[in-house]
Image 1 (cartoon, rainbow, N blue to C red):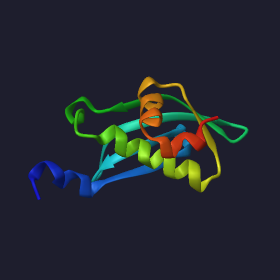
Image 2 (tube, rainbow, N blue to C red):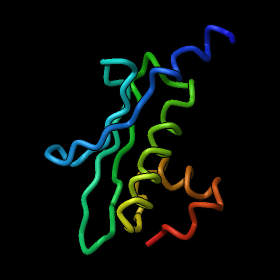
Image 3 (cartoon, one colour):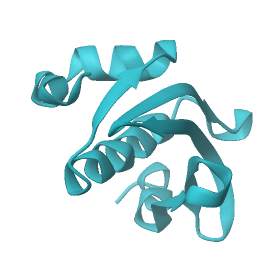
Image 4 (cartoon, rainbow, N blue to C red):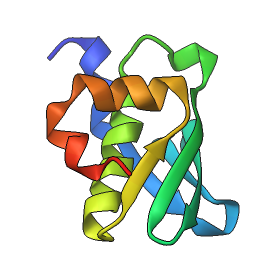
Length: 100
């Protein structure tokens, strides 16, 4: 496996409800986040970001994968206000059923 793929094994998404955000962790380092608010079962995602040192490696997509998994688990829908989140949803037809 090429070195560029190694970090993905340590990537995981955690929900931090007290901060109203999901965090993308690379081991113990936070490398991305997605802010959210929830009203009546609709999660609004106004902001998604990846640490500049890790941009261009697909980390934001991994983060959004975690958001989508949470939405499905919690029977919620999403309003992707962030341009990246909206583009992510648009590129993945399998997520369209989650749009509020």
